[in-house]
Image 1: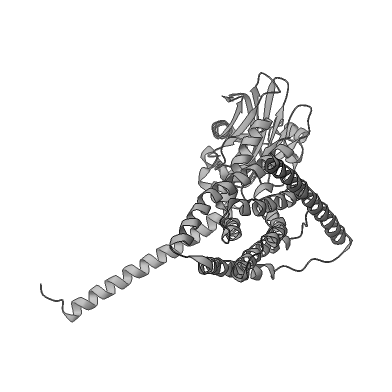
Image 2: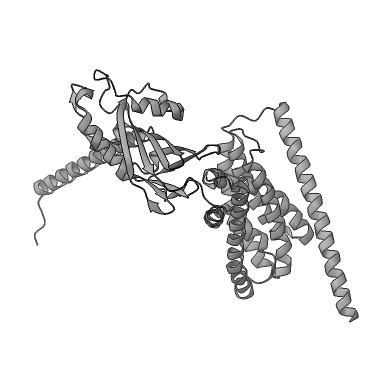
Length: 451
């Protein structure tokens, strides 16, 4: 095959350069459009009320107009032609009926009646349920000036139900292309109870608005398992705890101390008793990384079993705050079963930890028996963990330094004193409990020897 001459080679090179330039420009344009759509989607919030009546369920919903472009409201110049918007209003109501679903005891509900109207961006009637009902019932003025893709579409849908004590659920599939950037903020108003708020997206599964205790328990056990299995830093800390030990009876008190400690701060944080400053979450993340480094270095230097479970308990307090961040955003789905959900989330974490240990301990035993024998194996494994934890600590420390340090005012001192007293009391209770259990086991062992 003959080689191309210089002119032909130059033409091929120029053509290739043009193709590369076009591809780069296309990528830039696409990324620019993606950035625009991402920025646009961040503003997307749907507000809704779900109110339970003896034989009816009311859904009031306010949707930004750019979310329901499929309704195709008529335009008069740059403004919506409100006087001729009735066909588009019916299309918008049909979209909401289809994409926002409500269930009663697992039965899909059909809206018995539905009304809707256009509203200005400045309208504030959806701050209270009664005001929203009255506003949607009024017809929009024909000369209302609403620009295209601005303002809201408000709707009131009424569903027939059999009992106010039924289990009601909701799911949205409105504008799924916006993913988690389009949020549906719900204020659920049960009959004779306090209202509750929650936020879901089109990616959320069907959400029970008033779950039974067993539903909340099952949901939060699963959430706890998922949280611990997806928390690489927590798993690495757990691995670091058990690297030097071979016997289950040595591991049990360490894991128990970790469990009790993180349960203490997890529950306290869920009741908003922890520090609330913007600095605290990055501090917790940096402290978790530091706990991994410390434990790994202690493994290298040498471990005392008694000191290990005490230090583990102290670090467990920090990890409890970390667990709470995965819990807080989901407590909205607990309904009125807060304590059940907290306990179930903790149970899920323990199930996940036990599952990890059930896999890890045999693997470590095989590894240290055949590949990394003796103290050398503990040192090498711990050094690898320390290396990872060190990089996390540096990265998270840099994030923490971007936040101003908290002021030591009266509120901060009160919070510190409250947590210190609680930790001391919890540690004392654990110490007394451990002594009591030890005494009981000693008496049983003495009886067996005597018999």
